[in-house]
Image (tube, rainbow, N blue to C red; front, top):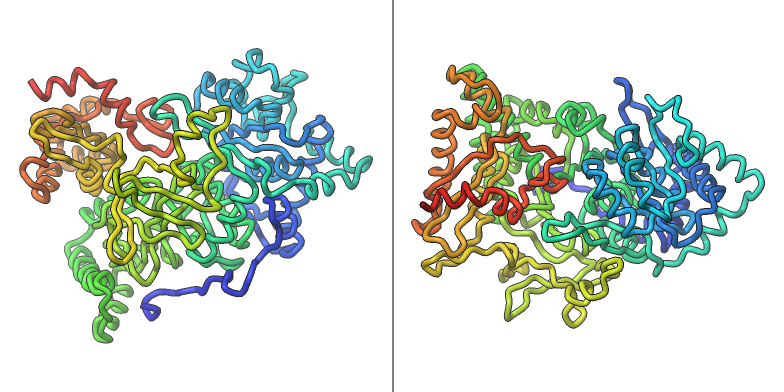
Length: 617
């Protein structure tokens, strides 16, 4: 296997990479250690600007002293309402450096959600990205008695603003420089006073089953986790990472920002979520972590592009991916790859597969990670056929990120891997629920002691995921405890298996399978607008907008054929009999979607109850 992929041994094998038992201690030691090396890059106005560790440290120091000038006390909370930008990281590290608690808010949240999160966290200082996010804060600030100051990253369009409660990040840094001159040692004293057991960050759950809950993570838990990450994802200063997932989500916060601080891998920030396909080609990351929807989007883009390719190009691709699939089969079976097949694979890469990798932007990648939701095993195998190992990880907000990982030497598509070296995982014998215990597990939910108590059983975190473990110690998620469908005939069905196979289609973005206590299964489907529109144009199917596109008989038939393809894999009682297409193009601002772009099952079932009922009449 090492002849196929560039394997880098974990740096952690020789000891701790960066000293420090708290996040700020770790950051300041890393900055002193790496100095003029590049830490972050961000594209603005068409140009990539680099931030060295020294430049980052200077900005963090000025912001931190600015907070001290505002009277920010240890243990107070500052929230950040912004997309994934470098300023997010600077503000976050500054808040932690002065002994504060840092909380992230999704930039897609409405003003009422901003109010709830700031009120629940007792936010004293609120960082916002721009005028759009500032409007949300101004709308609810009178209801936030503890909010003292709002700091704006980007003042474009706000130059004439004269509000005593609002200041720019540049002004905060100016105040910080002045404070630094008068109190040069105060920041160092705050960093030294920060203890491993102190609350460091709040990460709010998506709130699909009620109001969001603030998961509390200590400095000790974060440091414990990022040190453990180096054993499962070896990285160092030579690596390039792409930052595009929300930093208020546990995945990017821990696996991107804090792991970047510890490992030294460069963090490249995309312009905005829409430019990810373009930016990934420019960055050409060496290690990529993404949610399944991103990997599905890349695959469907290649699939659609091939339909416009020449017959010769398609033939060469089919041959090349066929060679890759044969190797993937051997690798997945744990069998050696013959030299003759390796030579064919080298030719296949030269003729076709390397071009596919370059089109996506993964041609320099060593490792691909996928998590946050189940992924189709067929998709994992396709990337493996390109010569790239895709490793599934599993975790949750409450476990500070990953708790299981897929070892590079034993990939099992559909399985979430083995327990990470820094945690324990087991399946409850009576309920089948997956339980986690270890230094990475959270401190509890903010202001919710009863909910916290419900989440633990004899010291183990109850994850809410139902699963099993095989003889090799690999775990598999079968479903959420609350999502298992029991049909009217008494058949237990795990809808996620059907949904994952449906999402492998280039024409389907997401799906929710319904059928609890009903005679048969049905599905609610969200189509991939770009690919379905192209299908309609290629087949001269008239449509005027998104709704009319989904109503077109030819599109309905196209999706039904995709459903039938999936149905063939399942027993008759597990097959989908009817479906309907969502006629609204959903974005992260819509209540039906989580911030990570997954359909909220219960909300969708409730909102479209009439249409669901119609499928059973």
